[in-house]
Image (cartoon, rainbow, N blue to C red; front, top):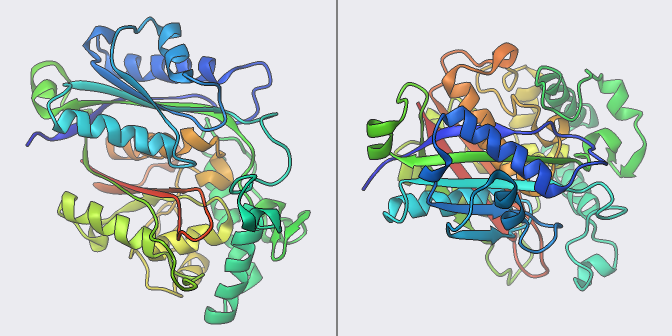
Length: 381
């Protein structure tokens, strides 16, 4: 079985782009990945396009703008995991021998796409009685506070950390350091959350080019290729009884699939990009991945262990809280950050000696199911 490598990465500025389209943003990211890989675009044999709130066949619109035509292309919608699921499609194509080079990208133009808080779906009975995503995660935060003594200040530190990292990322939505007081005094959203505990509405796109190990040996630059050692995907189990609000079995199970395939364990991970759509989400995902024991991560953040330069940096890109969250682009952007770190190209946010990185992306909710989709990617240098 061949190894799979990331040979090219591209990403737009995340933020508000009122005069752009999802297709235009996607085309910019794809061109960036092709330029980074220094390949003839005709080498690309298959493609996967992640998007959630965009028009039909947005992927074809993107490829049309970059002059790619005639190749197999699938549009992927899997909530916030759409882009990460697109990567998995390219990963599997290469493993199956369907392609030597495959393109995966995610693009989203969210500004103006919806108003108010994001909900699971208009016909979801829980959403009908107020279960917006901020409300759901706020309840999880309150429960974690009751079970493990999490303080409001500890929760705020996660936003402070991630926005500090984002200020070092030229493509991030936010570029300004904040304080704990800024978080505590921000506009209330859903107790205990204020505005700075929540990821923003962002526009943006990201793309990666994957290639087989044989192709890299024949045509690529092995010194810049980063191995995608595992790409795991799971959906949540049907809930026959109330599940835990403070531990994510779906994250644990998806991570275990990825660890087994990559031949590593949590103890081998040097840094992580995780789906911090809300401050509490970073806690739940890090502990679900097995990187810290349940109930211990908030205190570790307080001690600086998750900072760049700490024991295990978390969200050096700024995460969703700082870098932004253009839904389908998020999972791809996480892999872009892992590649930059493992190449040593992350500039002032570079993690010294990083060799193994993990990206976690979880999206969507539907009544009676633990979670809609969860992806975990492990990259190694």
